[in-house]
Length: 194
Image (tube, rainbow, N blue to C red):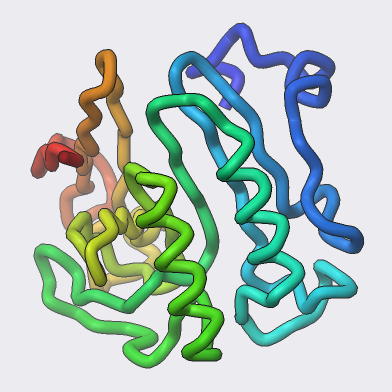
């Protein structure tokens, strides 16, 4: 990360970081950079510890997220987590892994999570887990699923990198995909996050 953001050094990052709820202080946090507010959310935090859980955004995490989002004045807000809001097939291969997995298995928690993202105009939710790449609106929220970057180690979908670009209040996601050998990445698609 430092190679792309050379001004972010560990000590400066620590000073800017807002720690998450008790038990997840190092795996749930937020920080500001430029005109953006970033939230890193551990969706395996069970309300007591960040090392357990089955993948449900708990009330404790949602309470913290609500306060964090309400406190920022940045025009662009990005939330990241491991599991997607909803699993979407890979944009090229059509493979669909982890079809029933979600950032929250609890319907009430998922509803509250989505309401918070919408209420605070979160530009996108960035996630992984599925190993399938997609950048699309899910339940009214832009979701950018990074897929995997395993080179040729996963033959079900091309290895992928996402690059988020920001200019003023406009934002785009560039999708770079590898050839079948897992090498030679080329930009496959650009999605404007409106």
